[in-house]
Every structure is written in structure tokens, then in C-alpha cells.
Image (cartoon, rainbow, N blue to C red; front, side):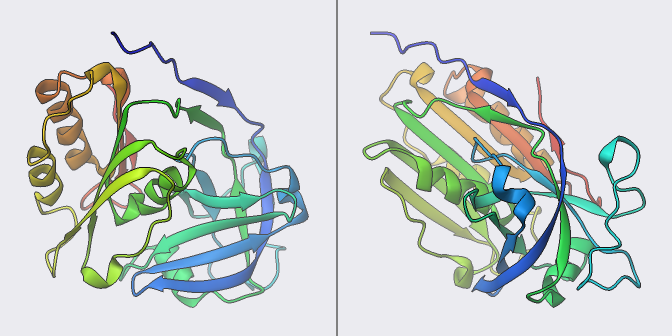
Length: 271
């Protein structure tokens, strides 16, 4: 019996700029820090897909981060002259007006620099999400692959999968201290791949783990693969699944969450 055809639903959202205040800071691991932001403007926030992204706007040099006067919309509603980066809404509560964002702590970069010093009471600008790419949750198998930059999206997807769903997750992290429990009702097999001092974006850990997967016993049309990693790594993995598992490329969603050696080098991967 052939697997049913499932067409993802593209949902557009009103693009808005919201000022949100830090109300909680939690270190999940040595290199992952979680922030809860609150705002009355978030009480109509909507995110329908685990890999949605919002754009975070950071205070400019010299601004008081405990105030929001620096955050003013410019042409088209977007602030001008502010550094911005894309992040996954890990979870949100529209009733309470809160959103959780997890930051990977690097040694450099405006987002990591902000997250390293941010405290309760500081403000950020949050824009989006512009849209959601909603995928059916009734595939026979979900394969989720990524490094630590994609971990919030993978964690959210696992948390939202229905009970009994079959899932495989391959996650590359800096070291064993970054491994953590990922709550899910799915039948999930989670494998952590540890770099142990090797620089991110320079290993073949994800590719070797993918090559070691047992060929699926289900129809390739009944599998959904999601990939989030360094852009060239993600592109190579997408090609591998199309060629070796004979999967329709429409069911292999791959995102370049960053690009080795390039600041703000994230990008979508298309045919």
C-alpha cells in the first residue's frame, strides 16, 4: 500500500516587531542558555512549526539594555542599524505572553555576546515569525538531524510529536556535557555525536552516523527527514538521503543554520 500524499501547509503571519523583557535565565548546559521573555505584545504570538524562526534585535553599543527606548521601528516596521539574528521559538505561551529562546554560547558573535551577559530585566526586539511550514505529524518515520544550533528545533519537534510516532534523532554537540534529556511521547531513538574538541563544522560525524543507519523498512514516501546544520553539511546530507534512500526531495527539509567562516551565513537549501 502506497503512503498517502502529504502536502505541507504554508501559513503566513503578520510581521510585527515586539519589545520583550527577560524574566528568566537558565543554563541548560555549559554551552546552552535558555531565556524566557515576556511582553503584552506576545499575547497574540503564534508559531505553528517546530522550525519556525523569529528575528532577534540586539541593543546597539552604548544603549541601556534595561530600557527599550533604543528599539524603534524603521521603514517597513523593521529597526534600522540594529544587529539581528534568527532563532527558534523553543516554546511559547500566548496566554502568559512569554516565549522561550535557547542560545548556543560561542566565544564570539553579537548574539552569543549578548546572551553571555544578559540578565533579568533586559530588553530585546522580537520580529516574526513571518510564516510557518507545517508538516503532517503522521509520517511512518521522522529522521531529525542537526548540530547544537538546531537542537532547540529538534527538541521542540520531539516534544510535539504524537505518542507512538517513530523517530530517529542524530545530534552533534561539542562534548558529553551538552547531552540532555529530550522529553517526547514518540518512539524516539536519540544518538548524541560528540566532537570532543574538534571545531564545529569541520567533522563528518553527522554523515557517518547517517551512513550507519539501517535502511528503513517503510515506504520512502512515508518518511520525513529534517536537517539543520552548517550549510554545506546540511546540503550534503540532503543529497545523501535523496540518493541512498530514494526519497522525494520534498520530504527532506534542510536548512543551513550557519556557514563556516561567515557571520550570519544561514541560508535555505533548495534544489
